[in-house]
Image 1 (cartoon, rainbow, N blue to C red):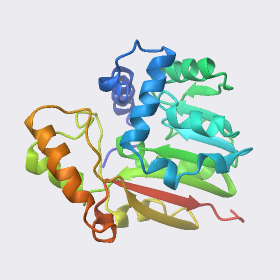
Image 2: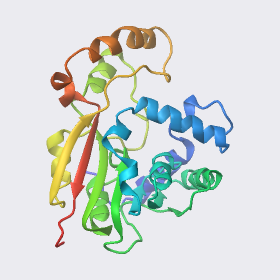
Image 3: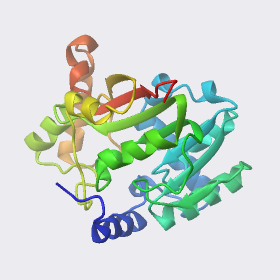
Image 4: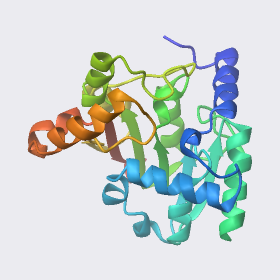
Length: 262
């Protein structure tokens, strides 16, 4: 078990994400330019085609939204452009700097801070929505982060999380094809079963977990394995009835609500 107060691990995580901008490998434009951010947005929502279908960014107009692990602000910008009042924190100073540039170039209000999501320097009951997509699996103590996000969420508020599914098509394919997962070299990377994920979210009064992210053609990998994946595996997998394969989605999305009397 990794200790929540392991400052050396927190430092290692911060250093790693300072040096590994998410999805940087596909960028062709200079880092920090408007074209760079547009390219990352297009790639992310092509790879994660399900995300705007399960998260209606426009539904949070006027809400106070906090994203922990905001990266360069790709998802948070969608909340902001739809009229939400947003704030973003990240352990990486590089990510926060780029997120500020991203928002400034789009004419969006910026409220970003370098902060550890396991020890938020924010008041109780501050936000209507908390969002952490693909963050809990990379932090030192995911339960502590969940507890903190529950603390800063207002009674009746909603939390949106995503973690990686242990029992997924991508885990099986990675082992079969001997291809590393993205960011497998990170200081911490975990996967969760649906049962484990739900147990971690026990502070919330109501939790719904939805397996998502099914195969789409890769633009990150190349060579024979990538060709076989794109030309054979993706098409074959996606003709299977979704009801059969849904439990094996690579992403476990959770929509959790804080008790109204908390």
